[in-house]
Length: 121
Image (cartoon, rainbow, N blue to C red):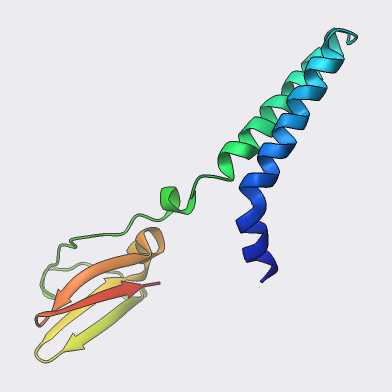
C-alpha cells in the first residue's frame, strides 16, 4: 500500500521539488563560485531527471512482450539438455518456451489449439 501511495504522489512531489531546486539555483547562482555553480547545475540536472523518470514507465523499456513467437518442431530444435523450458499442452498441440528467452521477454502471447494464451515468467 505504501509503494502504491508513493507511486501515485511521486509525479506531484517531484515537480514541487524541481521547482524548489530551480528557485534555489537561481537564488544561489549569483553568490556562488565556480565549484558551487557546477554542484548547483548537477543538482538541477538530478532533480530534472527525477521529475521526468517519475512520469515514465521504464519497465516497458526492459520487458518487451513477444507478440508472435516462431516455433520449430521438437526434432529440429537444438537445446542444451540442461536448458529449462515452460511447457503448455492443449489437446494434441504442445509448446515449449525456453526460460532463457522468457527471461528477456517475460510475456509471450500465443495461440495453442485455437485457444489464446499468455505465457509469463
